[in-house]
Each structure stands twice: as C-alpha cells, then as structure tokens.
Length: 187
Figure: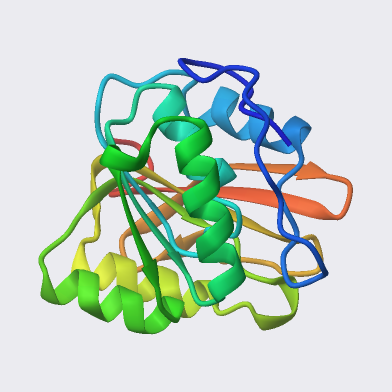
C-alpha cells in the first residue's frame, strides 16, 4: 500500500494486520481519485472508517488541506498515526477513536462540513444509506463536494438520498465505488 500521487507520491503506508479491515487497493484508490478529481486546491476530507488512513492521506497528498479520520479500533488509530508520521501530515489531521454514527453526531454538533467524505465500512456491517441520510440532513457535505462510498457489489445504493445524487458508479471486481454529490443532478 502506497501513496499514488501528489506531494507524498510513492510513500509506503503501513497496513493493519488481521482481517478487521479491508484496505482499498492501489488500483481502486487511483481510479477513485481520477474520478473525484485527481488534484485539489485546498479543502477538507472526512474519512469515517479510516482503517490505515490511506484514502485520506491520498486526498491530502493531492491537495486537500485538512482531514478528520475516525476509526473505532485502537489498532487502526495507532497505524493511522504512524502513517501520518511517515507522510509528515500530523499537523493537518485530527484523529478520533469513535464509532462512525457517534462521530457523525459530534461533527454535526460542532457544525463541521467537508469537501470530501469517504465511507468505506466493513462490508458485513454497512449502514451506508442511513449515514448518507444523516450527512445530507445535517449538510456535512459542502456545495460542490463529493461522497465516496466503497461497498460490496451485492449492496445496491439508491440513486438519490436526501438531496444527494449519484454522480458516478464504477465496479472493480467485488468492489463498487458509488460517488454522491449534493443538489440536483443537472446542476
């Protein structure tokens, strides 16, 4: 696992041992950022199931300026911190050990909003539509932002959820990337 492009291109990232996480492959990560926008001029990213932190680190390497990474596993938090040190990104990132649904409530209470939101939950415990509904209702996604959902191909997400619409779907083996944007599809 490595950073594909940007300021930290080529930096190797540590993964989590065991089967608690399913890291996004470099091929899928590269495809996601080719679709979402290969490079950014500032902005913030929320990774609600951060795992090793690889997706948010990729976004920061490509120009986003700050990030919030959430994971409920202590081992993941340790690996995230190590990967942030490897990439010298500690000062741009807030890392919290928390359950995804509880974290959303804290972010809402603190009036946070993001340019990119990454949702890549364990396939067996997905609540993507519920979380997308919460994100839409609370307007956690900024205008012009994107939500990246990585899910099993057996999961079918709605085309529209609470003001969000699907802007792109792509399948890579058993993995599907569904991207949502805010507002009407013709905007």
